[in-house]
Length: 339
Image 1 (cartoon, one colour):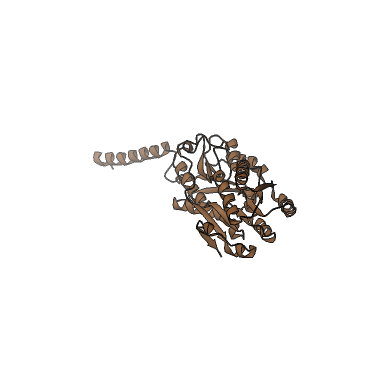
Image 2 (cartoon, rainbow, N blue to C red):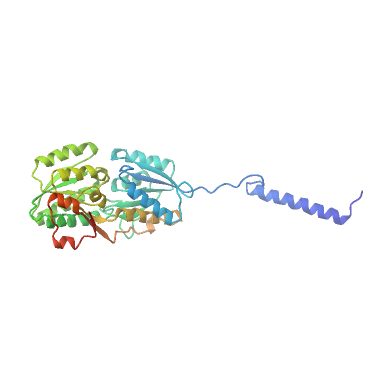
């Protein structure tokens, strides 16, 4: 049977359109029966010299910050968690491991971790989550213009060391010998210890340096403080000392040593008092930097933020056990009391 010219042109049009459609799809690298390639979730690395247990509070704050910016771990963002539990000698190799994966961004929680990440890559963005004195440590050019591939949040550690020692001396006016427990492997703590020496001289306090470089050094440090003339303790915050905060607080209680710390978690563990920025808020804020960078902003264009508010937390139960009554001028500065 012959077909009419009209029916032939309609059939030819349909076949031609179908062939053209297949050609277009093939040109796009996909045929109708092939599934569309899923969009890959960004992958970030989290590099911490501390332990997962000791940093769980700030990790949860970081996760909360990510959720506030629309990221759900395992769905819209993947995180490579790395906790070294005080083994700083492994920072370089673990940072190189993250770079080799590769991750799109690295979050690092202290000066040694940031330095290891920066030494491992000059192109992958690095977000500091709580690094003290990043300019002095040579991690960034300035707070306003960090340069290169590093930005984030600073804990403003050096400026606070003097304040902590002053508060400790005001609480214990008769105190004349202060032990300073610190980790010299952390370059930022070297500067903080020097600041403590200057502040101590102005306050008429003699400083005894108690150095710890790893978890195995604490027993020896405690034994030395038992023998040395010590009536006050200042602990410089560091991932290493943070991991041992309960041991430090227990030792101070046993030796009846009034002690000052840089993070509220020490006080929650039984320490006497702590003064410093809210670390939870800083890690939560780090998520803002992650979001901006993943959306295309260069780290060099994001100024480094300093903490604007500070906590002064005291433990009244510990104070009673030590026989300490806080002076009124101290109580007026307290932001939170733990009973």
